[in-house]
Structure formats: C-alpha cells, structure tokens
Length: 302
Image (cartoon, rainbow, N blue to C red):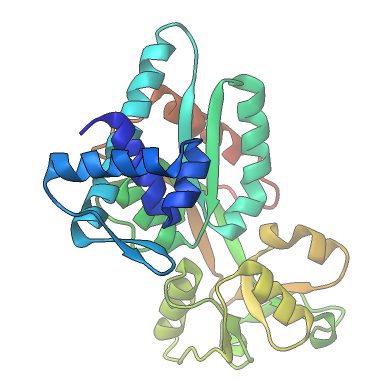
C-alpha cells in the first residue's frame, strides 16, 4: 500500500466510477484498475463491488475510504507545515459553513485569504450545521462554522458572533408600523421551518418547549433558498437572522420582525477537532475568521 494507491482509491470512492476517477486523475482506466488491484492484494481484502452504474464500496472499502481521507489530510498538513518553514502558508484547507453564516462571511474570508496567502488553497462546503459537525468528526473538514447547541465534546468551539432571530414574512402579512412580534404569536402562524437536523429548528423547538406550546411547521425545507422562495410566495413565515437576507429585506421583497418575549438569538461558533493538529494554513484561516467576525454586517456582538 502506498500514498498514490490511497489517493486513487479515495477518488474512486468519491466518484463511484473507475472511468470518471481515471479521467480526473488523467490515467487510463486499466492503469487505475492495476493500482486498485495492487491495493486489494496488499490489504488482502475486496474494497469495491462492480454494479451496473459503476462501483460500490464494500464494508472494508468504506472503512478504508474514511481512514484514507484522514491520512491524506494529515499528510497534506505535514507538507504544508514543512513548507511553512520557508515562511510560506501553503496547503489545502477544507472549511464547512451553514448557509446563513456562509452568506455573511464566505466572500470576505476568501477575499482576505487570497490577498494575504496567495499560495493557500481553500475549499468551502456549504451544509447544515449537523452535516458540518459530522464532516469535522470524520476528518473530511478541517474547520467548521457551527451554531451553538449540541456540539460534540470532541470539537473545540469558540463563539464568533451572535445572530438575533427574526420572523420573516411576505410584505402583505406585516403592517407598516410592525417591528416586533411576540414568540407566542409566532407559534400561532403557519411556519416554514428546517428539519430536525438543522440547528435553527432545535433552537425554535427548545423555545417552544419552554413556552409550553407545540412547534408544528406546515412545511419543512432545509435549503435556505427554498425557505426564502416559499415565504416570498406567501405560503407561510420562517425564522432567520436578518444578516442572511440583506438583499431581500433592503428591496422590500420580504419583511422582518424581531421576535420578543422572549428574544431569540444564537451564537455562531468556530470549531475544529481537539485531537487533530491544525496545519499552518488552518491556523491562518482561523485567525482570519476571528478577525473578520467583528466586522460582520448586522451581526450582534457577544
């Protein structure tokens, strides 16, 4: 087993196809098959099963794919750290962000990193808080932005900023002078909410439980774009931070009312694995995120 074989296997696992992996790696399919055969011989186990649509990982193959991503990530960080000894910040850093935070910070982060560390490569994955956390725990992500709540003890988590939550409605549902709405009244409205894997849903569920009221959305949708579109069609209301809807609110397409009695807010957290040392590039990304946190538009101080 060698690093080239591991890298090739990870590409096959991600794409589910030998031909597509060979194309990505700029190899012939027979050459890639030979690498796979050598890897299976070295491990004395079958890693893939051929199907009509490509290939499928065996149980052993799934285990190897997960471990190989961590090994390759550690190797990349080692290479980056050795390079940093020559006063360069290089390597590849994988960052996961939930949609609402991504709208606020992703552009500024990439712009700052490109300006300061032009040799650093960064990949940004937009996903729900629960999936970002899973990516950190599995080693698929180096750094994550999460919302406070059920954060694993295996992760370091520090607050970046606080987001106040607002009821987002179609303009026809809001009086001209309305700026606030009581949480009890929010629960009486037809709500369009994310599913239970979303941190925002957990925050609303907790507040509803304390109020002794059920939370019964009329529609569930995890994609931010879908939530916004359904509200714009006047099919219900949703709950979001104002910072994720700057354009829609400024043009009057949607209206926002602060939720009061009680006020609702959540913390945006910076997170990474406790027992996985950060590369020099990872440290550069974290320091940049900390610096940018205080400049986020419409985000409240902690």
